[in-house]
Length: 419
Image 1 (cartoon, helix red, strand yellow):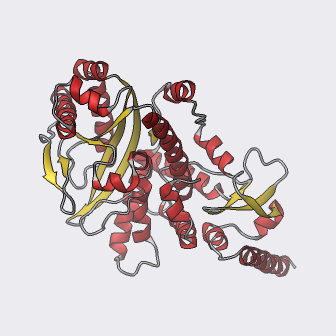
Image 2: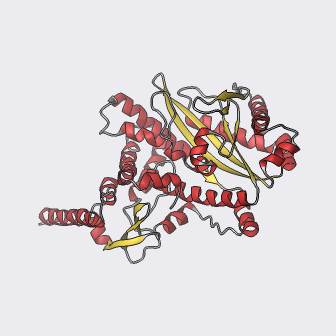
Image 3: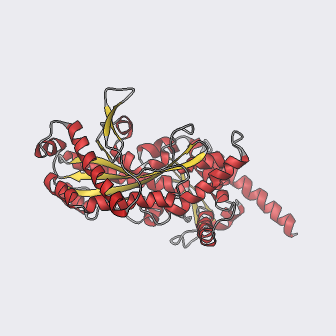
Protein backbone atom coordinates (compact mmCIF):
# COMPACT_ATOMS: atom_id res chain seq x y z
CA UNK A 1 0.00 0.00 0.00
CA UNK A 2 3.06 2.19 0.15
CA UNK A 3 1.58 5.29 1.81
CA UNK A 4 4.05 6.92 4.18
CA UNK A 5 1.58 6.94 7.07
CA UNK A 6 0.20 3.47 6.47
CA UNK A 7 3.75 2.16 6.33
CA UNK A 8 4.68 3.51 9.75
CA UNK A 9 1.45 2.16 11.20
CA UNK A 10 1.48 -1.39 9.83
CA UNK A 11 5.14 -2.34 9.59
CA UNK A 12 5.08 -2.37 13.37
CA UNK A 13 2.99 -5.42 14.33
CA UNK A 14 1.67 -3.57 17.36
CA UNK A 15 0.13 -1.12 14.87
CA UNK A 16 -1.87 -3.95 13.32
CA UNK A 17 -3.15 -5.07 16.70
CA UNK A 18 -3.95 -1.50 17.72
CA UNK A 19 -6.27 -0.96 14.75
CA UNK A 20 -8.20 -4.15 15.46
CA UNK A 21 -8.30 -3.41 19.18
CA UNK A 22 -9.82 -0.01 18.42
CA UNK A 23 -12.34 -1.74 16.18
CA UNK A 24 -13.35 -3.99 19.08
CA UNK A 25 -13.87 -0.93 21.31
CA UNK A 26 -15.85 0.80 18.53
CA UNK A 27 -18.27 -2.14 18.40
CA UNK A 28 -18.81 -1.77 22.14
CA UNK A 29 -19.11 2.02 22.03
CA UNK A 30 -21.94 1.92 19.49
CA UNK A 31 -24.12 -0.17 21.84
CA UNK A 32 -23.93 1.92 25.03
CA UNK A 33 -26.67 4.21 26.33
CA UNK A 34 -29.87 5.45 24.75
CA UNK A 35 -30.40 8.37 22.41
CA UNK A 36 -33.22 9.18 20.00
CA UNK A 37 -35.02 6.32 18.28
CA UNK A 38 -33.80 7.26 14.80
CA UNK A 39 -30.21 7.67 16.01
CA UNK A 40 -30.31 4.28 17.76
CA UNK A 41 -31.56 2.63 14.57
CA UNK A 42 -28.73 4.19 12.56
CA UNK A 43 -26.07 3.18 15.12
CA UNK A 44 -27.48 -0.37 15.28
CA UNK A 45 -27.30 -0.66 11.48
CA UNK A 46 -23.74 0.70 11.38
CA UNK A 47 -22.66 -1.63 14.19
CA UNK A 48 -24.18 -4.63 12.39
CA UNK A 49 -22.09 -3.79 9.33
CA UNK A 50 -19.03 -3.23 11.53
CA UNK A 51 -19.48 -6.62 13.23
CA UNK A 52 -19.67 -8.47 9.88
CA UNK A 53 -16.53 -6.68 8.64
CA UNK A 54 -13.68 -9.22 8.71
CA UNK A 55 -16.02 -12.01 9.82
CA UNK A 56 -18.30 -12.90 6.87
CA UNK A 57 -17.29 -13.72 3.27
CA UNK A 58 -17.67 -10.82 0.84
CA UNK A 59 -19.75 -10.70 -2.31
CA UNK A 60 -17.07 -12.00 -4.70
CA UNK A 61 -15.88 -14.85 -2.46
CA UNK A 62 -17.94 -17.67 -3.95
CA UNK A 63 -15.76 -20.57 -2.76
CA UNK A 64 -15.75 -19.44 0.90
CA UNK A 65 -11.96 -19.51 1.25
CA UNK A 66 -10.20 -17.11 3.62
CA UNK A 67 -6.59 -16.27 2.78
CA UNK A 68 -3.95 -14.84 5.05
CA UNK A 69 -1.67 -12.61 2.95
CA UNK A 70 1.55 -10.74 3.65
CA UNK A 71 3.35 -7.87 1.93
CA UNK A 72 5.98 -5.31 2.87
CA UNK A 73 3.47 -3.35 4.96
CA UNK A 74 2.23 -6.22 7.11
CA UNK A 75 -0.50 -8.88 6.96
CA UNK A 76 -4.11 -8.77 5.89
CA UNK A 77 -7.01 -11.08 5.02
CA UNK A 78 -8.58 -11.90 1.68
CA UNK A 79 -12.14 -13.01 1.05
CA UNK A 80 -13.97 -11.23 3.88
CA UNK A 81 -16.34 -8.29 4.01
CA UNK A 82 -15.07 -4.75 4.55
CA UNK A 83 -17.66 -2.33 5.92
CA UNK A 84 -15.84 0.66 4.39
CA UNK A 85 -16.94 3.01 7.17
CA UNK A 86 -14.55 5.96 7.59
CA UNK A 87 -16.46 7.10 10.65
CA UNK A 88 -16.81 3.84 12.60
CA UNK A 89 -14.13 1.37 11.50
CA UNK A 90 -10.46 2.15 12.25
CA UNK A 91 -9.34 -0.77 10.04
CA UNK A 92 -11.24 0.24 6.89
CA UNK A 93 -10.47 3.92 7.47
CA UNK A 94 -6.71 3.27 7.58
CA UNK A 95 -6.86 1.19 4.39
CA UNK A 96 -8.83 3.84 2.50
CA UNK A 97 -6.48 6.54 3.76
CA UNK A 98 -3.59 4.60 2.23
CA UNK A 99 -5.40 4.10 -1.08
CA UNK A 100 -6.46 7.73 -1.53
CA UNK A 101 -3.12 9.03 -0.27
CA UNK A 102 -1.23 6.92 -2.81
CA UNK A 103 -3.52 8.04 -5.62
CA UNK A 104 -3.17 11.71 -4.71
CA UNK A 105 0.61 11.38 -4.35
CA UNK A 106 0.83 9.86 -7.84
CA UNK A 107 -1.37 12.60 -9.27
CA UNK A 108 0.62 15.40 -7.62
CA UNK A 109 3.94 13.80 -8.55
CA UNK A 110 2.95 13.87 -12.21
CA UNK A 111 1.65 17.41 -11.87
CA UNK A 112 4.92 18.67 -10.42
CA UNK A 113 6.79 17.20 -13.38
CA UNK A 114 4.68 19.42 -15.62
CA UNK A 115 5.08 22.52 -13.42
CA UNK A 116 1.60 22.50 -11.93
CA UNK A 117 1.09 24.52 -8.76
CA UNK A 118 -0.76 23.46 -5.60
CA UNK A 119 -2.21 25.36 -2.64
CA UNK A 120 -4.08 23.82 0.30
CA UNK A 121 -6.98 25.80 1.69
CA UNK A 122 -8.40 24.93 5.13
CA UNK A 123 -11.94 26.08 5.96
CA UNK A 124 -13.37 25.97 9.47
CA UNK A 125 -15.85 27.94 11.56
CA UNK A 126 -15.80 29.29 15.13
CA UNK A 127 -17.07 26.71 17.59
CA UNK A 128 -17.75 26.39 21.30
CA UNK A 129 -17.52 23.36 23.61
CA UNK A 130 -20.66 21.21 23.53
CA UNK A 131 -21.89 22.66 20.22
CA UNK A 132 -23.28 19.62 18.36
CA UNK A 133 -20.91 18.31 15.70
CA UNK A 134 -23.58 18.08 13.01
CA UNK A 135 -24.32 21.82 13.35
CA UNK A 136 -20.66 22.87 13.19
CA UNK A 137 -19.82 20.38 10.43
CA UNK A 138 -22.74 21.41 8.22
CA UNK A 139 -21.79 25.06 8.62
CA UNK A 140 -18.24 24.25 7.48
CA UNK A 141 -19.57 22.41 4.43
CA UNK A 142 -22.15 25.07 3.54
CA UNK A 143 -19.69 27.93 4.03
CA UNK A 144 -17.13 26.20 1.81
CA UNK A 145 -19.74 25.67 -0.90
CA UNK A 146 -20.75 29.33 -0.64
CA UNK A 147 -17.13 30.53 -1.00
CA UNK A 148 -16.49 28.50 -4.14
CA UNK A 149 -19.74 29.65 -5.80
CA UNK A 150 -19.07 33.38 -5.41
CA UNK A 151 -18.17 35.55 -8.38
CA UNK A 152 -14.98 36.75 -6.68
CA UNK A 153 -13.72 33.17 -6.25
CA UNK A 154 -14.61 32.17 -9.80
CA UNK A 155 -12.72 35.18 -11.11
CA UNK A 156 -9.69 34.22 -9.00
CA UNK A 157 -9.77 30.66 -10.39
CA UNK A 158 -10.02 31.89 -13.98
CA UNK A 159 -7.23 34.43 -13.55
CA UNK A 160 -4.84 31.96 -11.91
CA UNK A 161 -5.80 28.99 -14.12
CA UNK A 162 -6.99 26.90 -11.20
CA UNK A 163 -8.47 23.95 -13.07
CA UNK A 164 -9.44 21.62 -10.20
CA UNK A 165 -10.38 21.72 -6.51
CA UNK A 166 -9.98 18.39 -4.69
CA UNK A 167 -11.65 18.02 -1.29
CA UNK A 168 -10.95 16.34 2.04
CA UNK A 169 -12.80 16.32 5.37
CA UNK A 170 -11.40 16.22 8.90
CA UNK A 171 -13.33 15.91 12.15
CA UNK A 172 -11.07 16.64 15.07
CA UNK A 173 -12.01 16.75 18.74
CA UNK A 174 -10.55 18.10 21.97
CA UNK A 175 -11.69 18.69 25.53
CA UNK A 176 -11.93 22.18 27.00
CA UNK A 177 -12.66 22.42 30.71
CA UNK A 178 -14.00 18.89 30.59
CA UNK A 179 -16.40 19.58 27.68
CA UNK A 180 -16.24 18.06 24.20
CA UNK A 181 -15.08 20.63 21.66
CA UNK A 182 -15.45 19.62 18.02
CA UNK A 183 -13.15 21.12 15.41
CA UNK A 184 -14.35 20.01 11.97
CA UNK A 185 -12.63 21.50 8.95
CA UNK A 186 -12.32 20.85 5.25
CA UNK A 187 -9.06 20.67 3.33
CA UNK A 188 -9.18 21.75 -0.30
CA UNK A 189 -6.33 21.26 -2.74
CA UNK A 190 -6.29 23.99 -5.39
CA UNK A 191 -4.76 22.49 -8.54
CA UNK A 192 -3.33 25.06 -11.00
CA UNK A 193 -2.24 24.67 -14.64
CA UNK A 194 0.74 26.94 -13.97
CA UNK A 195 3.50 27.08 -11.31
CA UNK A 196 3.15 29.12 -8.13
CA UNK A 197 5.69 31.74 -9.26
CA UNK A 198 3.51 32.59 -12.27
CA UNK A 199 0.42 32.90 -10.06
CA UNK A 200 2.34 35.37 -7.88
CA UNK A 201 3.22 37.45 -10.97
CA UNK A 202 -0.32 37.41 -12.35
CA UNK A 203 -1.73 38.69 -9.06
CA UNK A 204 0.96 41.39 -8.80
CA UNK A 205 2.31 39.99 -5.54
CA UNK A 206 5.86 39.90 -4.22
CA UNK A 207 6.39 36.39 -2.90
CA UNK A 208 4.79 33.20 -1.58
CA UNK A 209 3.92 34.76 1.79
CA UNK A 210 1.86 37.45 0.07
CA UNK A 211 0.15 34.76 -2.03
CA UNK A 212 -0.82 32.75 1.04
CA UNK A 213 -2.24 35.85 2.72
CA UNK A 214 -4.02 36.96 -0.48
CA UNK A 215 -5.84 33.62 -0.83
CA UNK A 216 -6.56 33.44 2.91
CA UNK A 217 -8.11 36.93 2.96
CA UNK A 218 -10.18 36.29 -0.15
CA UNK A 219 -11.72 33.10 1.26
CA UNK A 220 -12.12 34.58 4.77
CA UNK A 221 -14.03 37.63 3.51
CA UNK A 222 -16.37 35.39 1.52
CA UNK A 223 -16.83 33.14 4.56
CA UNK A 224 -17.94 36.10 6.65
CA UNK A 225 -20.44 37.05 3.95
CA UNK A 226 -21.91 33.56 4.35
CA UNK A 227 -22.46 34.07 8.10
CA UNK A 228 -24.07 37.46 7.49
CA UNK A 229 -26.35 36.12 4.76
CA UNK A 230 -27.45 33.12 6.86
CA UNK A 231 -27.78 35.33 9.98
CA UNK A 232 -25.41 33.08 11.92
CA UNK A 233 -23.86 34.76 14.95
CA UNK A 234 -20.30 33.81 14.07
CA UNK A 235 -17.38 35.58 12.45
CA UNK A 236 -14.03 34.48 11.06
CA UNK A 237 -11.08 36.39 12.46
CA UNK A 238 -8.80 38.13 9.98
CA UNK A 239 -5.84 35.92 8.96
CA UNK A 240 -2.44 36.79 10.40
CA UNK A 241 1.07 35.35 10.42
CA UNK A 242 2.50 33.61 13.48
CA UNK A 243 6.16 32.60 13.69
CA UNK A 244 6.94 28.92 14.04
CA UNK A 245 8.59 28.14 17.37
CA UNK A 246 11.07 25.66 15.90
CA UNK A 247 12.04 27.09 12.52
CA UNK A 248 12.24 30.31 10.54
CA UNK A 249 8.75 30.16 9.11
CA UNK A 250 5.42 31.97 9.58
CA UNK A 251 2.08 30.14 9.66
CA UNK A 252 -1.23 31.65 8.55
CA UNK A 253 -3.52 31.68 11.57
CA UNK A 254 -7.28 32.36 11.95
CA UNK A 255 -9.83 32.73 9.20
CA UNK A 256 -9.52 30.44 6.18
CA UNK A 257 -5.82 29.56 5.95
CA UNK A 258 -3.77 28.81 2.84
CA UNK A 259 -0.57 26.71 2.74
CA UNK A 260 1.86 25.98 -0.08
CA UNK A 261 3.61 22.67 -0.65
CA UNK A 262 6.25 21.83 1.97
CA UNK A 263 6.17 25.33 3.45
CA UNK A 264 4.64 24.36 6.77
CA UNK A 265 6.37 22.29 9.44
CA UNK A 266 3.87 19.45 9.61
CA UNK A 267 3.31 19.54 5.84
CA UNK A 268 7.06 19.35 5.34
CA UNK A 269 7.03 16.10 7.30
CA UNK A 270 4.34 14.38 5.26
CA UNK A 271 3.55 16.39 2.13
CA UNK A 272 0.23 17.81 1.01
CA UNK A 273 -0.97 14.43 -0.28
CA UNK A 274 -0.78 12.95 3.22
CA UNK A 275 -2.16 16.11 4.85
CA UNK A 276 -5.22 15.87 2.60
CA UNK A 277 -5.89 12.18 3.24
CA UNK A 278 -4.24 11.16 6.52
CA UNK A 279 -6.28 12.80 9.29
CA UNK A 280 -6.91 9.38 10.88
CA UNK A 281 -3.28 9.37 12.03
CA UNK A 282 -3.41 12.74 13.80
CA UNK A 283 -3.17 11.59 17.38
CA UNK A 284 -2.56 15.08 18.71
CA UNK A 285 -2.31 15.79 22.43
CA UNK A 286 -5.06 14.93 24.89
CA UNK A 287 -4.06 17.75 27.24
CA UNK A 288 -5.24 20.75 25.26
CA UNK A 289 -4.57 19.59 21.69
CA UNK A 290 -7.02 18.23 19.13
CA UNK A 291 -6.98 14.67 17.84
CA UNK A 292 -8.88 12.33 15.54
CA UNK A 293 -12.06 10.87 17.14
CA UNK A 294 -10.66 7.34 16.80
CA UNK A 295 -8.40 8.35 19.70
CA UNK A 296 -11.55 8.47 21.83
CA UNK A 297 -11.54 4.68 21.58
CA UNK A 298 -8.26 4.57 23.51
CA UNK A 299 -9.89 6.58 26.30
CA UNK A 300 -13.00 4.35 26.26
CA UNK A 301 -10.96 1.13 26.46
CA UNK A 302 -11.43 -0.94 29.62
CA UNK A 303 -7.63 -1.23 29.75
CA UNK A 304 -7.35 2.51 30.29
CA UNK A 305 -7.14 2.94 34.06
CA UNK A 306 -6.36 6.66 33.91
CA UNK A 307 -9.89 7.83 33.06
CA UNK A 308 -13.01 7.70 35.22
CA UNK A 309 -16.14 5.80 34.21
CA UNK A 310 -18.06 9.06 33.84
CA UNK A 311 -15.40 10.45 31.49
CA UNK A 312 -15.38 7.20 29.49
CA UNK A 313 -19.14 7.51 29.06
CA UNK A 314 -18.67 11.09 27.83
CA UNK A 315 -16.15 9.78 25.28
CA UNK A 316 -18.59 7.05 24.21
CA UNK A 317 -21.32 9.63 23.54
CA UNK A 318 -18.81 11.78 21.64
CA UNK A 319 -17.78 8.82 19.46
CA UNK A 320 -21.42 8.06 18.72
CA UNK A 321 -21.94 11.70 17.76
CA UNK A 322 -18.96 11.51 15.42
CA UNK A 323 -20.23 8.31 13.74
CA UNK A 324 -23.71 9.80 13.22
CA UNK A 325 -22.42 13.12 11.88
CA UNK A 326 -19.92 11.42 9.55
CA UNK A 327 -22.48 9.14 7.91
CA UNK A 328 -22.85 9.96 4.23
CA UNK A 329 -20.20 12.70 4.25
CA UNK A 330 -17.45 12.76 1.63
CA UNK A 331 -14.18 12.00 3.36
CA UNK A 332 -11.92 12.62 0.34
CA UNK A 333 -12.68 13.11 -3.35
CA UNK A 334 -10.90 14.09 -6.54
CA UNK A 335 -12.37 16.96 -8.54
CA UNK A 336 -14.62 15.82 -11.36
CA UNK A 337 -12.59 15.01 -14.47
CA UNK A 338 -9.22 15.48 -12.74
CA UNK A 339 -8.04 11.87 -12.86
CA UNK A 340 -9.03 11.51 -16.53
CA UNK A 341 -7.24 14.78 -17.33
CA UNK A 342 -4.01 13.62 -15.69
CA UNK A 343 -4.19 10.18 -17.33
CA UNK A 344 -4.72 11.70 -20.78
CA UNK A 345 -2.17 14.52 -20.54
CA UNK A 346 0.54 13.26 -18.18
CA UNK A 347 0.61 9.52 -18.96
CA UNK A 348 -0.52 8.54 -15.46
CA UNK A 349 -2.51 5.36 -14.95
CA UNK A 350 -4.53 6.31 -11.88
CA UNK A 351 -7.67 4.24 -11.38
CA UNK A 352 -10.10 5.56 -8.78
CA UNK A 353 -12.83 3.13 -7.76
CA UNK A 354 -15.57 3.05 -5.15
CA UNK A 355 -14.52 2.46 -1.54
CA UNK A 356 -15.93 -1.08 -1.68
CA UNK A 357 -14.02 -1.93 -4.86
CA UNK A 358 -10.79 -0.37 -3.54
CA UNK A 359 -10.96 -2.43 -0.34
CA UNK A 360 -11.63 -5.65 -2.26
CA UNK A 361 -8.72 -5.01 -4.63
CA UNK A 362 -6.37 -4.32 -1.70
CA UNK A 363 -6.82 -7.92 -0.58
CA UNK A 364 -5.09 -9.19 -3.73
CA UNK A 365 -1.76 -7.62 -2.81
CA UNK A 366 1.00 -9.64 -1.20
CA UNK A 367 1.94 -13.31 -0.89
CA UNK A 368 -0.54 -15.88 0.37
CA UNK A 369 0.61 -17.44 3.67
CA UNK A 370 -2.24 -19.89 4.03
CA UNK A 371 -5.79 -20.66 2.94
CA UNK A 372 -8.46 -21.94 5.30
CA UNK A 373 -12.11 -22.82 4.75
CA UNK A 374 -14.83 -20.52 5.98
CA UNK A 375 -15.96 -23.30 8.35
CA UNK A 376 -12.53 -23.24 10.00
CA UNK A 377 -12.62 -19.43 10.06
CA UNK A 378 -15.89 -19.57 11.99
CA UNK A 379 -14.36 -22.01 14.48
CA UNK A 380 -11.55 -19.48 14.94
CA UNK A 381 -14.25 -17.09 16.23
CA UNK A 382 -12.91 -14.05 14.37
CA UNK A 383 -13.44 -11.21 16.82
CA UNK A 384 -11.42 -8.04 16.16
CA UNK A 385 -9.16 -8.95 19.09
CA UNK A 386 -8.50 -12.46 17.77
CA UNK A 387 -7.81 -11.18 14.25
CA UNK A 388 -5.54 -8.40 15.50
CA UNK A 389 -3.62 -10.80 17.73
CA UNK A 390 -3.17 -13.33 14.91
CA UNK A 391 -2.01 -10.85 12.26
CA UNK A 392 0.43 -9.15 14.62
CA UNK A 393 2.48 -12.28 15.38
CA UNK A 394 6.18 -12.08 14.56
CA UNK A 395 6.39 -14.98 12.11
CA UNK A 396 4.15 -16.83 9.65
CA UNK A 397 4.42 -19.97 11.76
CA UNK A 398 3.24 -18.12 14.86
CA UNK A 399 0.25 -16.74 12.93
CA UNK A 400 -0.86 -20.22 11.88
CA UNK A 401 -0.22 -21.76 15.29
CA UNK A 402 -2.34 -19.09 16.96
CA UNK A 403 -5.24 -19.53 14.51
CA UNK A 404 -5.32 -23.33 14.57
CA UNK A 405 -4.85 -23.50 18.33
CA UNK A 406 -8.04 -21.45 18.68
CA UNK A 407 -9.84 -23.54 16.05
CA UNK A 408 -9.01 -26.75 17.91
CA UNK A 409 -10.00 -25.31 21.30
CA UNK A 410 -13.35 -24.10 19.98
CA UNK A 411 -14.06 -27.41 18.24
CA UNK A 412 -13.45 -29.29 21.48
CA UNK A 413 -15.61 -26.81 23.39
CA UNK A 414 -18.46 -27.18 20.90
CA UNK A 415 -18.20 -30.98 21.05
CA UNK A 416 -18.66 -30.96 24.84
CA UNK A 417 -21.43 -28.36 24.73
CA UNK A 418 -23.45 -30.29 22.14
CA UNK A 419 -22.59 -33.75 23.47
